[in-house]
Length: 88
Image (cartoon, rainbow, N blue to C red; front, side, top):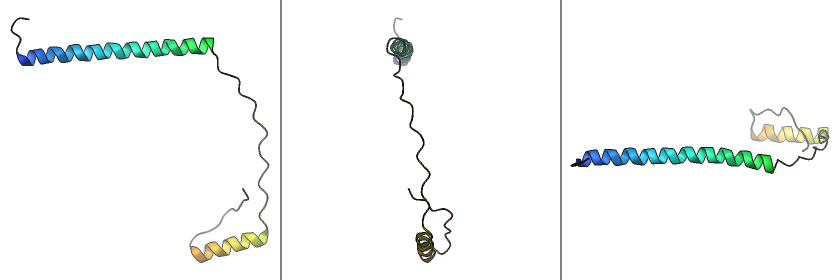
């Protein structure tokens, strides 16, 4: 390696640097997988409490309120159409 030109030195440094980064990233990946396996083995996920029953269906909207909503929408946006109104 006597008398390397600057471009050859730069290329060698780039290859060594990229190789080092590649090796370190591979180590990080496998150590992370090992750590995940260890955590899952020694500290398993807690059991989730069963969910409660579904909420009851929304109550029907009275006819007079539905008519008022439709009239207001028709006045503000004449091309709009109300398809469903629910209490929530």
